Length: 120
Image (tube, rainbow, N blue to C red):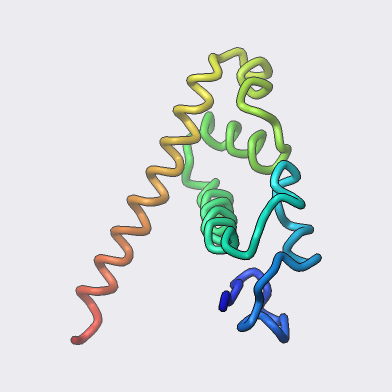
């Protein structure tokens, strides 16, 4: 059984065993039509990370904001961003990795803080 958090109003989400049309629509185009229900947790985690990155955009450096915007909002490839910004593809990749690492660090810190604050 899979409960897909991207389908909060779905009547069969508790027993979901396949990728439905609603989920198929939000998949990255390169993965559409090639996935099974076992892939849902990974997809949800990826979608969640993307949303966290986009929500954190205001606290990123101007360069990170520019790269995040081009990559996640405009759908450009790393090499296209590199050409557009006149930097190396490695610089684009490093920037995206730095943003993701920062988000993970922030999430771990929040989880640790909330555990310490909650009574046992």
